[in-house]
View (cartoon, each protein chain N blue to C red):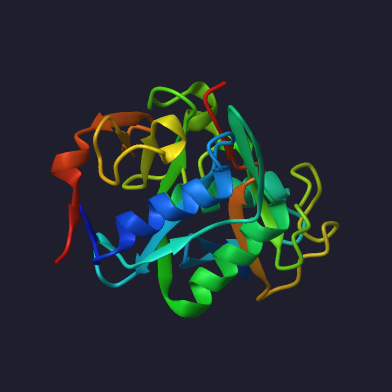
Length: 147
Length: 88
């Protein structure tokens, strides 16, 4: 399943990660879309969270409210996107504590606090597989920006 | 002759999708949680997941559904108990 982003999603993602992380803290956003349109991403949601140079944690009350809001609006979270201070990769923490550890959910990691060029250069992408593990994917092959 | 066992249902929502899950009031929350995890195909690190009320109270795994205060027809949220990430 590829993710199809409406125009502006990638730029909005970088803008939020940069604005919130200010080049010194990690940050996370969620890519959302209508549940009935497979792979569609037309929303970028910044959760309430705390973060430091090498970590983030999402507010518990916010998570429950977010899932209730997705239910109410017929939407779903298709990916989490977060920044790392240096290289992009999937840490043990990333493996264990994602928003939605079920098949088809993606996790995109952007290097250098997302301060680099807007795009997928040097990004790391993983998809949660049906075997319960994260599988590395090619960002360029799995993420397409609409025009 | 089999005796019919009364089973109630709760709606469990996870990442925007709902499933109806049957339960007995005297059943442990953990058993209902396991059925919900099966329904949503969550197969690994299941001990990190929990059932939450709409008011964000996590149901204790070892309590019965009745003792946890769950009522038939209630909406519960399936989610990770903690969501975090990072390089470390």
